[in-house]
Length: 551
Image (cartoon, rainbow, N blue to C red; front, top):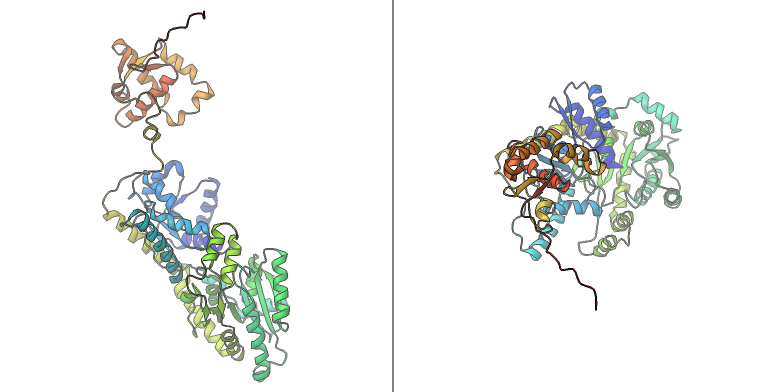
């Protein structure tokens, strides 16, 4: 999946180019730390790797910002609330925003304690617009239902995804070798598509097939003199089909729409195979038409490979590909708002799966086939145009999209968030849906233990009895939230030496010191549970009169 590849690429860029010395990693599986530690050594980083998990979240105050590879900040904002909203910044990123999970995650910002010193990076202007539309719809609902007037949101900066440009530099010999291994002639013109081969969830291939078939027919009828005698048009689809049903759909579409097109399908999951595909190509094509796309990394990789592009004027491609400079952006069309509510409802009610929702939505997006045909003809006619556009694209990839450049934008954002956080006023630490159980369930018991409650020792050899009870599994399972054994001894000894072997709870807990006293106070309830102490003033059972024999 694209988001997994993007995450792996980010981590590599971060480990290579981040300006800090030490690295901080939040994880739940300890073995993951070994992988990151090995990666740090590979990139020559000598700083220390600090690990954080749910048991020591407060350590996030030290790095001051945590990056999560997704838009779901709400959960982490609530977790931060217990430590103070200003304790650290949260930074997420948009990948797809069309899934129910992603949309719910974005809408959840409006209720969660996200702050202005948090951010969710939008990878394109188009996806930022989508996020803002979704938020505005939810704000309108909250205003109508609850009269909400104050809205606090994270920053939404636009920063592109990055690539490692040096991974896409192929020599003339690499091109010759790749073509020989793939059975492609030296004079053949090769158009390349890279990505999942999914007509419903990535890019419907029919416009590409039709445009290529028409362009080649036009070349043979109008520009035959510009082609080498034995030139053929080849299409490489470097990706993978999810199943045989989809694979057959692709084969059937090519046979019907582009019978003269020679199609070579390669497994894009294999790195070596992808390298052959990039090295052998003349033109890159991606006529994306799907709402699950937010940025599109493959056009950037194509630019880094020195290929001219024919891409749809769609979503993130609008930001990354310069029309008539790096290639051609082909116009796309979609019906106006209000004509797709039924599609959203079908998905919301689970009538349609997410894949079907994407496919149904994409079926109403068109790409101008004639414009694509003309773009292909121009590129097929002119090796010089292909060279110029490829060179411009490679320069663009190096200057705008290499991780060395993009990482500086990430770090500038994190520095700005830190400044906002440092200048803000303190805020409450409330997490209303996760109340302290001693507060939330305060009406459950007969009485509430507090500092003025009187505690009495019940046992003559109280500590010895306590130690025996600690051997029971049903007792010692709670030790991680209790004072330690030595602290219990201090409290029991204090009671044993007090007049009447009793004292107010405040005094008993105080023997642990100011910081630990609250832990000692609540632990008195546990000692009472074990029969070591009891509380004076507890409600007594009312005396009852035994009924006499019936007459």
